[in-house]
Length: 376
Image (cartoon, rainbow, N blue to C red; front, side, top):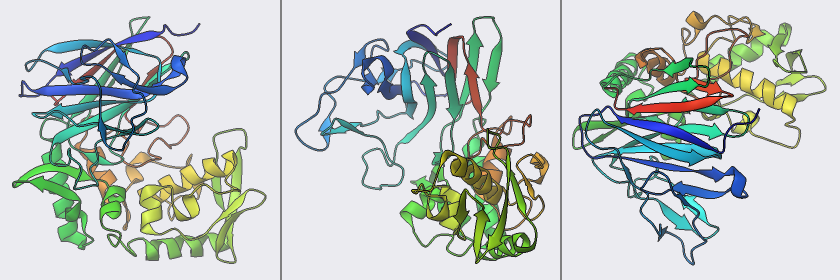
């Protein structure tokens, strides 16, 4: 059975502001994957045409007002791929168009972006003929509390609770405390505006803005991992048709025979999960991709020296307990009221049957997705 062509999404204003705006962007699956933006009425599709110059404004209003605190606004979207639900408090967001058309999205890593000093955030979803998949994300940054409640056709629900109203303050305090402990630069991930915490950047975004940040942070740990798996194999369960594969370090490369090799990753490679040895390459087959995800997750959680059976030998309580580690991810998970939420790109990796870390909901028969903004 395939899903209906449209989905209702209930947007609840859980903030204390009467000026909260939502935006929906994505690729319209049933319209050749054209760029899609939902218009301000929350019902009408807008498919931008290619403008003649960069930085052109949208042709129609796409700011969906959520009304006063505690109120709910229901919108309707078609089947979308790579979609985002954006929220902004006290300001409208500026989206621009480049020839293509290509959407210029708000940026937290470009200080000249018109949205840089505004209070905004987003969650992600894909809605197709097979299922709705939605998740809160902290891969780039943390700003606003967002929670998800998914109701399916049988009446059952799934819930991701997100951070509480003071979650950003808790995360910023944690980053300051960690920097006081190790001096690695965690406090530089905090972006403030007129003395108020505006957002907390992920290490990956922080490195985009300051390429020297965390330089050398993982070097000793990576050397220790390479030393350990020179004499003993690292077993990686791909959790797919390739089963479990064994890798050992040969000629300073972590080698999975017949599949591929990994050079030693830098901190930037580990935090991004997509550069250096973790970047896509000609030999980066689907099997190599499965290994990459599990290896990158173990580096972020610093479990490679205590568990040679990845990821099925993992115990969630062991995550982030060894130095160095991704303290941003540790602090963000701890601040979430259910400890869930994507804090790095492969945060969905885990032992088979283990507790979900990623803050996602999904169902093949969705009826209503309720998104609460503000933690209220």
